[in-house]
Image (tube, rainbow, N blue to C red; front, top):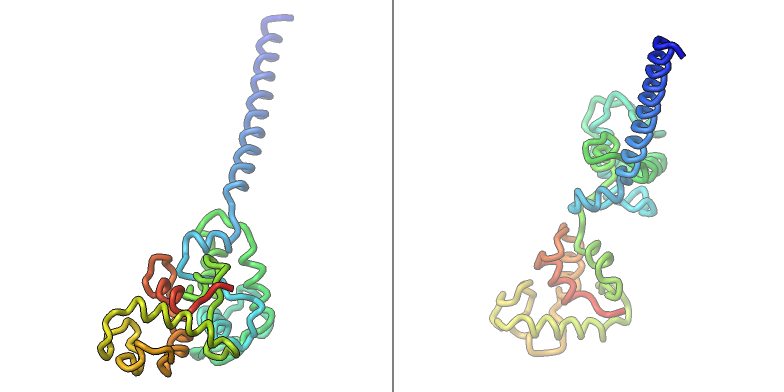
Length: 232
């Protein structure tokens, strides 16, 4: 082989190796990028723990879905980026008194399952804006204490369970004066030593359970866990 031919052969081999390296490097980069992607729903739990996706099984007329739909409408008065069936153009502020279309709920469910590279992704931020509600005490209880049952004022035949939590409440509130207890229950000064619950104990549990709390060390959450739940 002549010197010129050897040089040409070497250049060709180097070029082939270079191209192969580029293809291999690109493929590896794509694989790594894909492996770093996460679903919107899983990323939300980590990056925005103060928010929870609205359950798609919740009725369209639920307050959370109404508020979510109004946010979408007010942010998109002249265009419909998600192509939601039931959307209409408006120049007015949309109140949160209209039930969300089924298609809107469906699109929230679909988009929350998509994979994104991070919180900067537009899909992530759209889902965060349009498909979430505040994290509640009840969320923390159901997610972290699966062996605990939340007591509700409307439950029937639960008096035994209510007495259990009432006993715990009394033991943790040593100040027996009026308004001396944490929740400042009606009639506390007269009922702290008896088995009869104050009139508003059950309804106080109802209201405390839906308070907006997302940290597990928040005392409001810990109080409800102790005073409004039982094993079950």
